[in-house]
Length: 422
Image (cartoon, rainbow, N blue to C red; front, top):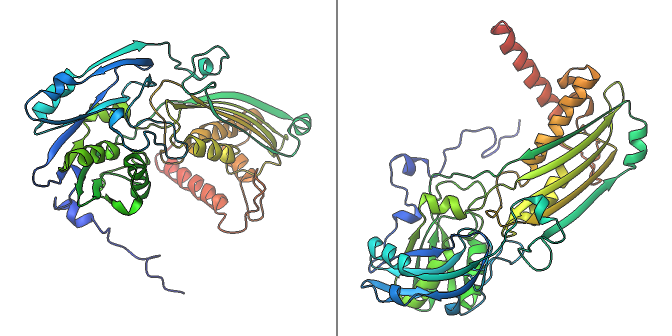
C-alpha cells in the first residue's frame, strides 16, 4: 500500500500548541510604539441620504489625531469581493444600518469614543426594502441603480414539463432559511503601519491577497507598496473573506504616519459583518411509483442584503446543487439574487448549498412518505453513482461514495436504535 506524507497519518495542527499555551498573537494582541486606536462612525438608519457631515467638534478633542471622510480617500472609494458596490466611506447614500460614514484615530479608547459621538451626521431617512417580495416590486425603492436584482440565472436539463406527465406522484413544497451570523469568537481587527512609503497591515482575515488589492486601489498606489499579513485568525467560516477593518486602518495610517489599530466590538461585528444568505425556495419534484425521480422544478429567491459580496458565487452554487446528490434526468432551476436594505450577506460555509439542501432533502422525505417507502431507500435508489450525469452535464467518474455513506449511516442509526430499544 502506498505511503503518503499526510493521508492516513496523525498530523499535528501547526498552531495548536501556541494557541493552547496562549502564545498565539491575534491582530487585537499586536502593538507598535506610538500606536493610535481607531473607530468608525456608522449609520443608525438602514436607508437614507447623507445631507451633511460635521466633524469639527470631534477634531478639536484633545488626543484626536485624525478624522477622515470619503473626501479624504486618494484613490477609489469602492470595494467588493466580486462586484464593486460597497463604499469604504459613504458619500451620499445609506444602504444599511452600520454603513461607515467617518473614521477616527485617537490616542486612547475614551478619547476615541468621545470623538465618534461628537461627529454630527445629518441624514434624510428614506423608505427601504426589507423583504425579497418588496425588492422585486416594480415601484420598490432601489438599493443600487434602477433594479434590485443583483443576478438572475436559469439552469435547464431535459424536458421537465413532459417528464412531470409521466410521474405517478408529484410533491410541491416551499422552504425558507433565515439570516445566520458566523459568530466567530474573535471579532475583526487590523493593525496598520505606513513607513518609508510602504503600507503594512496585519489582519484577522481569510483573504489577505484580496485585502491587499483593495487597499492599494483605495490609496491609489501600486501593489508593491502594500503588504498584507494574515495574523492568527480566531475563526472565520467565510465571514472574514470580505474587507472589514483593513481599509479604514490603512487609510488612517497613510494620513497620520503612525501605527493604527482597530478592533470591532462584538456589537459592531454583529451589526456589519456579512451573514449567510436567506433563501426562499419552491420545489416541485416528481417520481414513478417505484421511487425513481424523473423531474424537479426549483425556484430560488435569495437576499444579498445591501451589498453583493459573494452573492454572485452563491446564486451559481445554489443552482448547481439544488437537485441534490441525486441523478435527475430533467431539471429546471430559476434563481434571483436581490438587494435589500438588510445586513450584507456573504460567504458562509457552503455558499448557498446548505440552504438548498433543506429543500432537496425535504422533497426526498416528502416523496418517501407519499410513496410509502423508506426515506433511505428513495435516496439510495436515486443517489449519484459512478457514471451519473449532473444537471450541468458533468459526468461523475471518481470517488462517488454517497451510496456507501447513506447505507453505513442507516446501519449505524439502526444499531443505535436497537441498542436503545426503540
